[in-house]
Image (cartoon, rainbow, N blue to C red):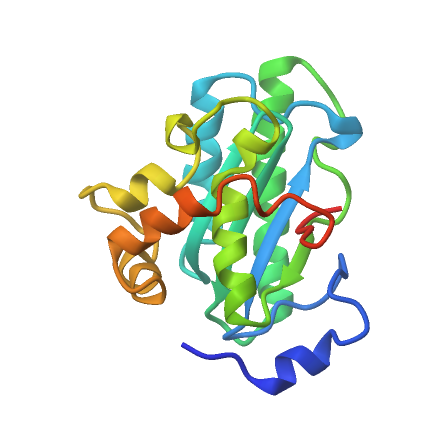
Length: 203
């Protein structure tokens, strides 16, 4: 796997742009949180429904490397498979609307569930890809929800290191890390080293 120079040039002035198109072949860290920092997940079934709706609306349009769902926000790491940014944006919009409607009904609430305009950052080099994988998986540790990332139910980490069938790009990820054991070891060694001022993946 490699990254083209044109990818870096595209966002040379600003890696963060909440409205950049999603281009075929590029990898993005996609994330968003609840409107007004409200929760977007309230019970176990909500997390499962979110993933089911994600794969229903988005699954065939992207390759999914990693995810993490937290009570008031989510993270995804994906590679775009189609050369149609407007179609993909519409698919994401329909996905968020579908999920929001279910939560609004469940909670008896009205209005937007998510902050307007989901955020996305282009992953433009290999080091950034590795760090993004770790950042997403260790987010619950960062937010002091758990002490060990493999104790969290709603991330892709345990799925990736298991033998279960998955729609995640497990084999490709392990190729990046030169094997499953190196993938696990990276997460162990990287602990508490990614959340300093020199590396911020969300704002």
